[in-house]
Length: 382
Image: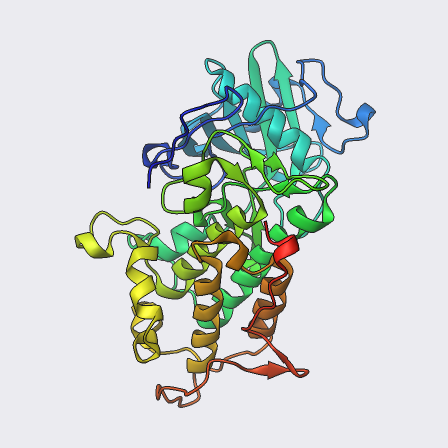
């Protein structure tokens, strides 16, 4: 899938596989053009925003003068450090944007303008920012457990394998964060960079979406999409958006489907270490969706069979619907939230002997509503 557009706009940044984070879940790249320009003297609080403005010297001091031991990682637009705010005692993550690139300035604007207007338990909290001269720093709450990507794919770590219940909790929480962006914010926001490295985990594996540099205001009124230069991360970008540059809320749904498949299978969205046919997660999964008898082959081997068979089938069905090639066939985020919250509310006890026999049905009813069958309103689907 080619992530490009023949009529690019200079307000966006195309992300390629080489733009991925090297290590830190707190740093990423991207940007968007905003109506307001955040000058070095921009005061978010006076404009009704909630972000706190810091002096640059205070933020540098908070990281121990950017010492190596506080270095968390580096993305396409700067480095991230662990910091300590002495006046509040908070442990924070401080992202230092690369002042040599204009895209870093746009990412800075998008982050502050988006997160200062957002408040939800499944969105990372922007504590504040520093802007002096050509320097830009962003201050976030520190998410001590790192990213979902690290827990799923970092085989060199000593982290324990995520159990089924935790995976469903993370999936449901991430969906709730996306629902807030799509339906609760005014104007609504298309995330455009949903992936495992942008889902951070706090105490109790509580998930929060992070990095909103690629966020874009969604279509309004009778509009069905926003035309923009194609951007995102290879493997997560919806094929219809990649081909046309027409961005809508269903573009995020496709990305969520890929993330859900990663959670269920333990495979990366793109993995060049696997044989050719298995390098792309969606391409590998689609043939298996056609044969219910092969569903168990899609379960993450590290779960060692410790999962509810019916629950796995239901979750895979949700993922399959999200990655439909036609955007109007993908479910609404509200339906996804309801289904995943139901699955997360059904705790699985791995100590109880379970059977891996195949179920004849992947549909379970709760309050007489099928949780894996969607009624798609075509009028609202694009």
